[in-house]
Image (cartoon, rainbow, N blue to C red; front, side):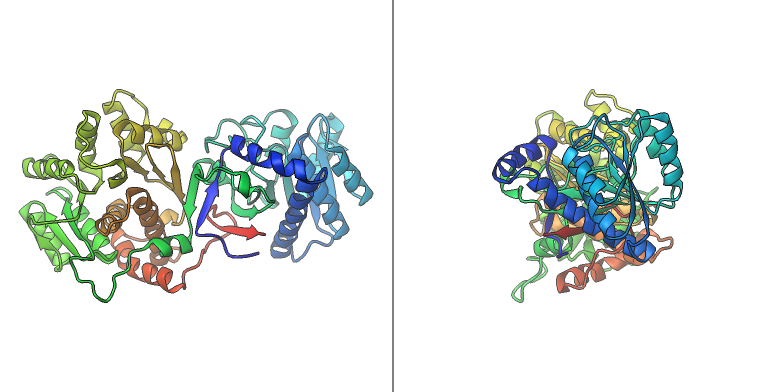
Length: 518
């Protein structure tokens, strides 16, 4: 094992197959599969050691399909059998990889033809007592959704067994992150060559478990630009703006904030707190008198009224108000970088869809949730229910980014940042306790602070989501939190990142955790 890179990357299935072809031509037959199987065996042994105390005598059931994933499982199963595990291969496909089957049988493994009724019944009984289930049913060449014996046996896997997926959980769409049909959720996914987009994109990412990235020598053949990326601790630390000794409050960035209303004064307070705690030099606040009073009581360092700024945060908690609406319109037309939230989203869509695009796409960051994406697409003439956006978040975040020529941060359990060119960032660094009122305002403030310091929209969105998530984890410690707690925890999270004290925390089911085998 080694530490992960600054950026985790995922590539589409066609790009992976193209990268594999020259490597397969150079290596002896089965060479790439042998590398994958050896790494898969190592992960399974580690999992059994952590969950059962070791591999010896443990019951392993492999669901083996006809493709390369089934071959990887059979070869790894041969190793596990020699390690002392009791391994059974349940053949759910029309045939099995012959070399892998021979190796598995030679090692003493048990084979059951699960497509036959009697065989399926045997496998069901074995699954009831399994310590580990190895999912080698289907990979990037399969269609979404399981059926037949694969569907039935996947449904029979008990919660007590740890599921390790070969390359990706069977039944998912490898490229989109969409869930269409039945699948086998994993506790651990061992991905070969590179991560697959479904491992980073919601909702599929939520059923992939812990990720283990295994290098098998195909990276040189992959495109220079990944389809999906995820920043790690090191990636955020490397990009975070740090003031130098000659700097002052103006060189650290001046963020203008148009936020809050008589109905939602707290949104303005939280947005300003998020920006201030993320390290911006000055926050200039524009809002109704009573809201301004709330802000100044909570953040006396804030400066009320208009003045020169280097970026804008617009819309958090804003309702229809002539002065606020005018300030938002002027800010959007200024050409300065903008973070656009809540009450400013509709005006941003109106301006940019009508051709008023004063700022470039990488200087405008929209921060909607799924319901707001639904409303904006409806405003643009493409009515989409919220539930459909939630089922296809990558598709609709990208569609919105293209239609308004701006960067879109779609908030959710896994936060997506989409560019008009179709590239995606995916961050899953937080706690489910973050789903509480006001945390989105803090997130917008953190993003605004970064853009005021010159960070582009794509990086600002991913970095803000990362720090916001980690601040939520730190504040929660496993229990409920309020949005103000997240803002208060932000400086310590940034300090840990910059000093190298930060680490990925979480359990087996947290999809953002990743190890690398090299």
